[in-house]
Length: 175
Image 1: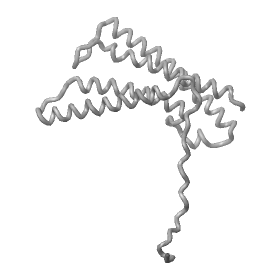
Image 2: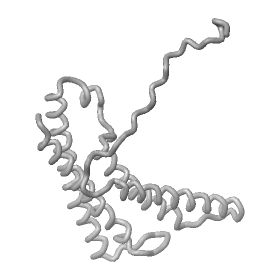
Image 3: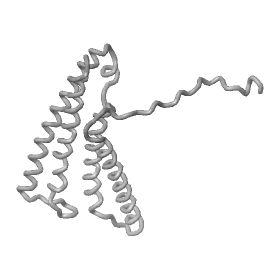
Image 4: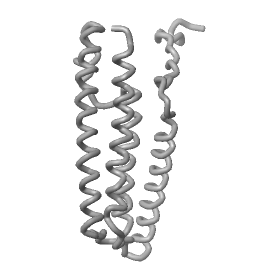
């Protein structure tokens, strides 16, 4: 082997296997819901594109269902992102400094997130109740809009429970 054919690259380290933090309710539930929603969105969108291409018309219901599915997807994926510590944050602040500083920032951050999702749960439940009370219907399909909006308080409550679990584990961990 000649010197020019030898590679001077650094050896590549294998990517470590990422394990989920210990939780009572498995994260696989939200993972599978997210996967199924992505599949449904792809199927609905593909069907609408094919129909529109062949007939120059579109299914009116696809946009309504797609928006609903995207909201549910956002909430289920957000739930797992918080638990896996993959949510949006400024890593320079969140991951920098001493362990005590990082812990304090995490406590403040998760406390604010918890307060936000408690408030979102309450307000979105009131919105769904109003839609139920007034009998609002969707424009494309004509179904009651609370069928869509009831999932926002339910999934906000799920995220609230997940974040409360994170805070509980963080408070129980040695400082």
